[in-house]
Length: 456
Image 1 (cartoon, rainbow, N blue to C red):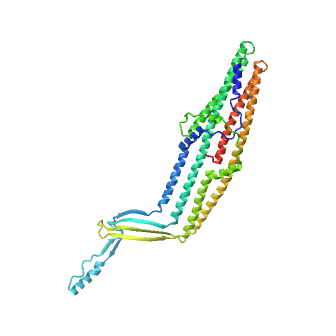
Image 2: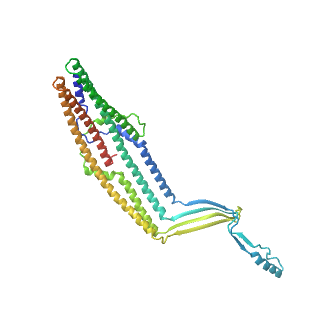
Image 3: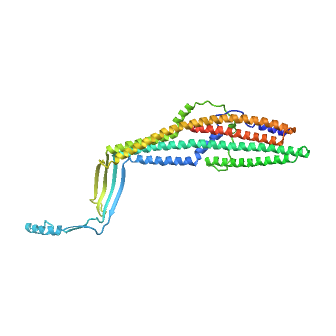
């Protein structure tokens, strides 16, 4: 009897009596968060995406340098159109007459007629080409656009990091809650086992009939069922937590006992939290980068409509029939300008399209700012409601424990029925479980507020 009473009193003080709004910083949890930030697969994908966008920036930067290319070609031809000109038939008789008149052989008389393929045969052009853009609006503004896109992608990674912090924290709290539930059910199971032994003694002494034993055993079977579900939830929570950290799904999780120590409610100002979120949320930085890229695209299209592109270049190498390289060297220098004077109003349409994109991003930025303010407000009042709920469950757990101790004393003295004992024992079990859930819910709601405010 005394053992039962001691267990019941012990169960009544399993949970601390306090109101919470902000958990004690957990070094264990922070260590797990850092591990998740280092190993999480989704975050690795974001890092790879940053690397991809950075390479696009490097490609845009490379366009500022000269382009040098080695371009040898060699041509063989047969058939096709020919160039025929009877130059020999025209000049040979005339030169022969001149030689007779002058009495010399100064003029050739064996000139052949021209019969040449238009497609060159056995012809090579071995050259090095150099091209450099002196002024090109596409190159300049494309580089600025890619630079803003890199900034936006880096902000996107920080958004994922903030979300991952929240997911790891909540997964850890959920795992702790499953351990709490298992402990509650195991303690309830021990109380019912003591009750069964007590009832068996009462039956053996002819003080009670057999149904008190079977009823107690039935209650044990119900608790065993709840315990099995709680153990299943523990393994599921463990697997999800390890999944976020990219570890073996069955790896052990260190328990931080400091999380049961609770601080008083912190009086944080809602307006200050909203302003902090507007300055710290990386979703706004991501949209800001995209907006600046769109504004640069507007300037790009406006410059294309008004400013020509200027470039210089040149070729040097060898050109001729056969690879003799004798008397085949040549050099060509070029200065070019490209200016599209009219393209069917295409440029005007591109400018308008870029402005529409900019306006859309500005509207989206304003919408996200309002959404962030709403998210902070909801998280703030969710935490407040969870704190008040915890206070209520704390009071309910103490009242249920006190009521159960009274019924327990009456039952041992034969002044209460078994059905009353079981009813208040179940009420006490429910109150303990509700208090455990409410306590972890406050931790989760605090993590949600930190996510909304972007607390690192």
